[in-house]
Image 1 (cartoon, rainbow, N blue to C red):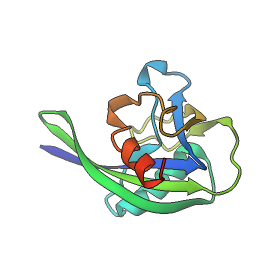
Image 2: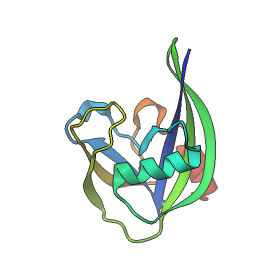
Image 3: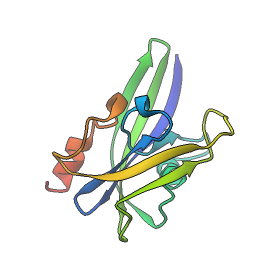
Image 4: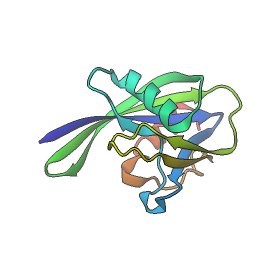
Length: 144
């Protein structure tokens, strides 16, 4: 069994959650910033690195750990997904694009991500591959 560690960032500003779509791969679905935790990183370090690499946002603040969920890709591969709540305390843009240049698949071509804010709890669209599994818990903790 192949085991991976993944960090997921639920980045909020006021009562909104940051989500994105791939500009060149619309079939990839709507997601939150996430990625592989490096072998020498803690989940907390991994989520902060991934959040910056994927969004370009500086000054994100770690709010809290929301939980770990096991996700089975198939019979041979499992991911230990660590979900964190991060806050963006400065006024971010309403929408923007950012180029991800540090791809985990080794491909040198950058990926363009298109970011926007979704209002919690009811305005969050269905996210791909259970990225939204703890959105309800986040909303509860925020009192929404």
